[in-house]
Image (cartoon, rainbow, N blue to C red; front, side):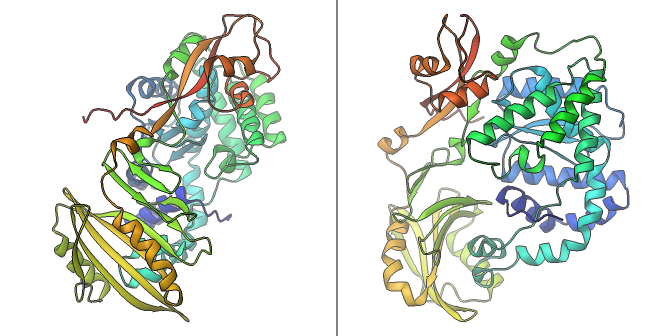
Length: 489
């Protein structure tokens, strides 16, 4: 089994195990369709909660329509196929047990035909059709105790909470084993069969793999959580899918979008890159426009996200600070008392009740021993409307005098963003333009003020970077636009 330290799938499995999926995995490994559906539903809830789903009506309806067109040709009738756009910037697609199929925003940005989209979706359906999750679960059941233990380690676990402790310590979180090469090949063939029966060109998978390979090459390697990380596009595999496609005869085409122009029109406005709704980093300043929050992490610290938290790590990697929501519709003191009970540590003793930018807060500092090292811990709970937020920082006690002022500055700056800060938030979206006669992709980028490189635009449009357009071709471009907070549903 290959172990991956991917925060996306690591967080997903820790959530799965925490909700009892380990026992269901045992049942699924025995071949139970009921357990396959149940564990798939639980994993789907975790995916939707931790990663999020893009529910933009136009593109979501299009992906669903293509998926159901394919599902009509699937052999398994004991499950219900469901199709989603997962809120991920990297190109990826994956399947959960029981028929939950996901494609990412990043993958859709590279699609140039419905055949390609059908190839990716069909491949993931192939894993479900062949019940690969059952065989994969049989290989990972023995690791469950190790996985659970790994998710419960960490310095702060004994003080604040188990899950935040694992985030701070960056403890390994093991994902389910990736599919074997034979399973990938089988899913390729099954997916291409389904696509052909649905009237799609089965070569679509091969062309999309080629596009993603080009994208990964210019990005300097396979990105974490990308399709090519879990579905390696080896030359042998690319050749095999193209060869197998040549043996298939597609049914009469009846696509949802009749040509490339209609496909691209479905993608117009697609969000690219990080979703501002999940918060954005502007340097070391984190802004959450949906919730109206901001926090400035210490200068030169490495910022990032974990499951349910944002934070930063010192250059020497020995101190961290995390912000996360810990309770809704509870009073501050009640939240702290509940954490006292779980941790067995008196948190309210000597705690200070303060105001942070007009918000009620409780602050507590304490020293604790972690192995051979003594640590200083700063815990702050802040009431923002109905939600209680926790700002937790840990540093070596020996360096408290150095780190405390930096951490205090972050805590004391927590609050509402200014109008000027909000105005800095942008969103990158896929837009369409028509090529002019004789122009190059470089000129298209210059003329439209598109973001990204000319090579990236060429890859996204499935053309060579040295292409010269005849004129009138519809092209995808990427534009940075002012972010507008969508209305509350």
